[in-house]
Image (cartoon, rainbow, N blue to C red):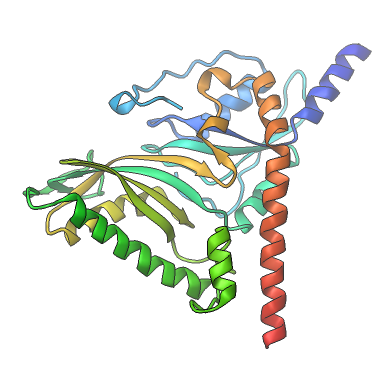
Length: 303
């Protein structure tokens, strides 16, 4: 009995922090959380069907305003809380951050740190739908022979430029100051408070009409916002476009290589993932809040 209690205590200690899993497309974020919970506590096998990966991609719903902790009891843990970070909607896939134990409190800090996330977003020229996705109700078809990669990259550059100006405004920074330049170089320009969705960087990864793929780094977004960006790019290019895939490839310090696949959603892998992420998470939060606190102090001195 003592050995079992010691083992449970050790397991509980290791289950304190943040980790990332890979949410497959077609799976609700709640189903991801509940599957992880069930497998951790009761040791039940994963029983949900595996969605078919789109376009042969590896299987590695909108932004929460607060973590969603979920309490439950099991044979090993008398009480365990699992919270979720920035959610992914049903159609989207990628890096999905979860918190266990005191990690649910870290999720609040994670949210307040205004960390940048990155996505690969795939679009298709030639049609428009009612929800900006390729599975929505068809509204219009159009030609796209006139679209070139150069034209697409020009529009992408305009989007990045306009969002950069908005980011500086929300961060209360002067575009011409040395401070803003140094923060930009370090990737530390962030809003002082909650802002509308902002794109910090965007580039074209692939141009193979009708398909194209973008890499978008952003703040305070949701996946529908990214689909709308694809739609607006189509309009700017005097055609139409829909979004066929949204995949999150980074959330703060968590990248695709950190995200546990479905076959890895078990106690040993999750414990290992939490331990491996611990120092990176602490450093990210420390640097982020040190930066924000310094900015707040600077604002007070100027006023």
